[in-house]
Image (cartoon, rainbow, N blue to C red; front, side, top):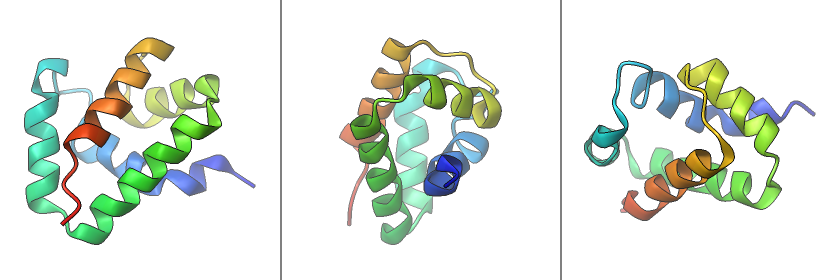
Length: 93
C-alpha cells in the first residue's frame, strides 16, 4: 500500500498552510490559522496522521514526503519538532 495515501491531511497542511513561502517562526500562527479555518474532523484527521508518522518512525519516507509536498529539506530532528509543534497546538474541538 502506498503510505502517501494515509497522509492526505498532512499533505494538505504542507501544501496550503506550511508551504515553502512560510517561515519556521510563523509555525504557531500557521497552526492557529489551521485551527480557525478547518473543521474538527480535519483537525482530528491531521492529529491521527501525525501520531501515525511518529509511530512508524520512517524518517526517510517523511523527509521525502515533506520535500515533495512542502518543498522543504528537513532532517529528522526538525521533522520531529514540526510534528510535535503541530500536535501540541492543534485544537480538537
